[in-house]
Image (cartoon, rainbow, N blue to C red; front, side):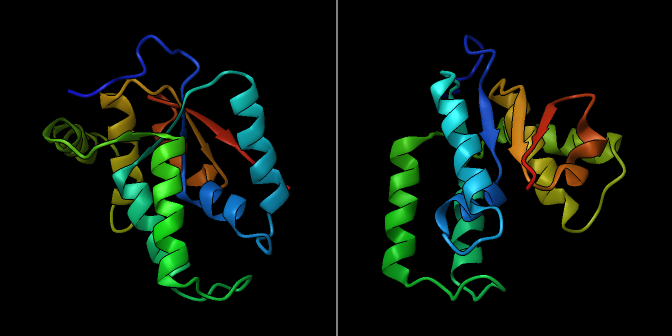
Amino acid sequence: MATTAAEQPDALFVDTNVLVYANVAEAPLHETALSALQQAHEAGRTLWISRQVLREFAAVRSRPQTFAAAASPEIIAARLAAFEARFEVADDTAAVTRHLRQLITEVTLGGKQVHDANIVATMLVYDIPALLTHNGRDFERFEDRITVEVINT
């Protein structure tokens, strides 16, 4: 397996919505997301994302949002490269899939909630204890497994 956060108890997984808000000046939580990321960085926390988060960011930014027009393919590709340079990136592995299968049998979820479960499975495999997100309610069902840190206005 690749690097884990085991020696970094303050490691923090960054959810897609935080990346979107931090990277779109017109986003409703732009300043809040930027501040949360900056505070985590200044505190010496290792910031993690996953390949799933990269794909989700590209999907969100490639279509118009209520707060911003779709970004060009060149801008999206540049942002993805910047994220890969700035964050630790967790790969989707067979171990992540095994943890996802376990979560599916242990936690009530379905549909789009499987994407959230996959983030949690990734965090468990890479020993990342905390998640930074705007959508805390999406992860309430996993609070016995991870710490959820919610950004708000």
